[in-house]
Structure formats: C-alpha cells, structure tokens
Amino acid sequence: MRPLLAERRGAMALTQVSSSKCCGGYQKVFEHDSTELKCKMKFAIYLPPKAESAKCPVLYWLSGLTCTEQNFITKAGSQQAASEHGIIIVAPDTSPRGCSIEGEDESWDFGTGAGFYVDATQDPWKTNYRMYSYVTEELPRLINSNFPADPEKMSISGHSMGGHGALICALKNPGKYKAVSAFAPICNPIQCAWGQKAFSGYLGPEKSTWEAYDSTVLAASYSGPELDILIDQGRDDQFLSASQLLPDNLIAACSEKKIPVVFRLQQGYDHSYYFIFSFINDHIKHHAKYLNA
Image (tube, rainbow, N blue to C red; front, side, top):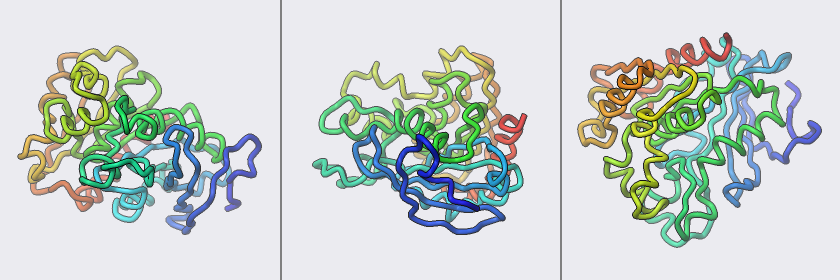
C-alpha cells in the first residue's frame, strides 16, 4: 500500500511512527502537531485492504482512563472485522501529553491520560485540554485530508471514559455520526466520583456547565435523526458496583425520549480489554450496518 500521507495536496503534516501489515491492511500510528491541544499527539489508524482502491467509512474509537493510542490496537482484536467490513478505525490518545502543567501527572483519573473528552474552561487546563474539539473537529479534518476516508460516513465508539466520550460526541452533534456504541461507559458523570473530580477541575464549580458533557442529560434533551445506541456492560465490572458507570440513568433518559438503546449486561465479564475483545466484532458489525448502508 502506498503511504497516503502528507504528499496529498492540502494535507496537514503527519509523521508515521509505525506501520504493520494486519488482516490484509495496515495498522499504523502517526504523530502530528495539534492546533487544539498545542502539543504533539499520536493517533492509531487501521487501513483495511479496501482503502487501497476506494474511500472507506471511519469508526472513531475513544479509549478509557490511563490509556494511550496503543491499548485498543494491541488488545481489542478489532482489525479482522474492520478488514472484512472495509472500515477505517482511528484511535486517538486520551489527553494532551507533556504540556508541563503543574499537577498533570499527579493522579491517574485526572490530567494526563484522563482528558474526559471535554473542552476545559479553567486554568491551567483550558489551553491544552480541549479533547472534545480535537476528537470532533481537528482529528476528522486531519483524517479526511490525509487518508482515503469518506467524510460523510463516520461513527464513534469507546470504553469507560471513552464510552462517555463517544456518547456525548454523538448526542451533541445530531447527524454527524451514523452510529454510536460503547463498552462500560461512564453514563452520568455529574453523578459519579470520576466525573465530579474531572468536571470540577476542567470546567469549574458551576455544575450547570457540566451538563453539556453528560450523556444522560444530553439524551433527555436530544432532538435529531434517530441514533441507534449499542452498549455492552460486564455484570462483574467493579466500577459498575462502585456506581461510577450508572447505565440505568442513561437507559431511563433514552426510553423517555424514545432513543433506541440495546443494552447488554454480559454475565461474568469485568471492565478489562478481555471484555472488549469478546464483543468487539458485534460492535463493528453494528457500525457497519449504518456506515455501509
């Protein structure tokens, strides 16, 4: 496969970090200077065999707390189904890196590796911590201008903090994403300890501003094209029992608004990538139904 990089006219500068043939296509990692995050960022991209000859739809994957672009591509086993369905999968990092912000590396659930897919409004985070705009605006522009991506066909998925990210991106942008799915998402962050810590740090003490990034609140006021949501949740997930995920609140909001949700509580599964690996094919099939329609 010819590398479809910055040689494309009008393309933004990318540096290829790695490339490995996988399931007939290529699993690659690139680095670029992010205008939104004001730092160097890496993202992973799987290019299926179909990308050699045609534009392909794009599934964006958002990872959870502490992850980089590596976790999904090495552990989820998504490449086979993406190859078969002709889908590009893009997996960004979970936060800005190396911004020399005081406190950014002090805890695993705030700062580095924990961007929570919001645009921060508070000092010292607001200059760099703009993951929402990065994921919904900058990254798709970068992908569409550098790779054989169909800009009209994108969808989004993620795990835990990234499941929260996927849900809010879809609910805040009616019609932008053809489908959305999530594994063990943080469904109602304004009501859980993880969300309250992150939102108070990034968005400040005014709780009304938090609601713009809470999928349960967003679902309750959603008006847009029908959005089919698929959620898998492990029944033995320690964070479910610790009330960090709160899926029942989202399901209630969706049923009130008649937003179709398939929620599957999977017996015996935990919060790990073993769980994601077990059901990733179902999720890619869910996205393919809408992306390849």
